Amino acid sequence: MLAERCLTAVMRPLSRFYTAHGPVDQASLPAPTPGKTYLLYAHVPFCERLCTYCSFNRFLFNEDIAARYFADLREEMRIAAGLGYHFGSLYVGGGTPTILIDELCETIDLARELFHIREVSAETSPNQIGPELAGRLEGRVDRMSVGVQSFDDTLLRQMDRYDKYGSGKELFEIISGCRDLFHSLNVDMMFNFPSQTEAMLRRDARLLKETGCNQTTFYPLMASPEQARALSTQIGHVDMTREKAFYDLIDDELNGPFEPSSAWTYSKEKGGMIDEYIVDYPEYLGIGSGAQSFLAGRLYTNTFSLADYARRVRSGQLTVTQVGRQYSHRDQMRYRFVTDLFGLRLDKRRFKADFGTSVERGLWGEMQFMRAVGGFDRDDDECLTLTRTGRYLLVVMMREMLTGSNRLRDEARAALPAEERALLLDGLPQLDAEIAV
Image (cartoon, rainbow, N blue to C red; front, top):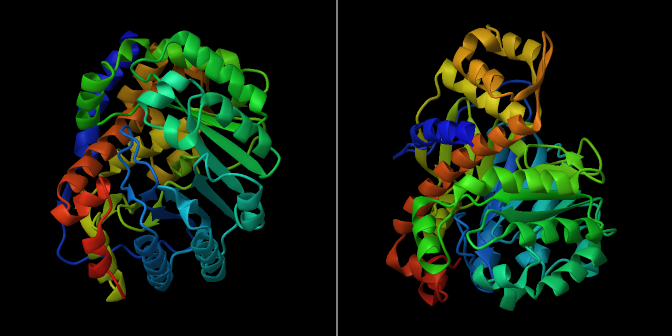
């Protein structure tokens, strides 16, 4: 698709520009804007199996290290409370946040005690979801997101998930058995994996519908350059030319029981939380090792080192170690353009009130491009909405934005001390002593 190739060519260097970071000696965050509500993101970087395609900060699970990490995470939450931010929602991501359920429950309870949290979203893995987990999280978590990725055994083996999480049939039975346990059950799926075929994807979409879940997010593969090289060597080249056809196939298959709630999320009911929380909360504060914050037009990244994270929190410090460039007025307009349209609707009147100019005048080139390729379904004085082509182009924009973040994560992981990099492979007894209370 020519429009996708043009957009990718423009977005890729822009993503590098917007995610460029530099180290800071003194960790700090801007003061909150009075009256503004933010989202609180809490990162839990532990998994029982490390997926090759995932760039998020994550380490192999060690119970003692993880338990102390959760305690530090709660202490950092208290530090965030002292900054005066008002959080309306909590998103607990990872990693696998449910890896120590007692610790997770205590962490969510503290967030509700400290802030006016209205809704909580958390992530989990297929081997942990079930009636026991649902019972523990009842009244605590409103939306549970479980990573399935595919029901195809060949793909699961290539993703190194088959041995840990089970076959496609077993995953299907797990999700089907959990569909009524949570108010909102989101199933994460993946498309455009190198060896995936249209037949595999069509089967995945159809089985997904049969599980009875009420939300699904189909992510395109967002491989950083390092990951793309590894995948090309091990499995095959990531073919971007077929991404649009795969997206259309998903859209066709899910149409009916589901309807789009973002450019890549489909829901049976409107108004619920989605994975890309920046749609409802353009500004957010991240706590935890490797978490990011976006505040007052600037991106902040917390230390990826578990030992450094523990030292900072226990001395009462913020954990920010990298700070991005300050977004200009135009940069912030572009950010709003992407986040609002990713959520399927841009309010033109609100845009003008916030930025002092119309979206047509402020982002003339972006508007002309989207109009020329047939991206807008509704384009009047009130708002912008998207055609299917427009939704796919927002997937491309978000894919490139997040690929830029993945590149940052790869660089941060490569800079970890050697003893911590070992936890990416086979556990880390040395670190256990270093971060012990």
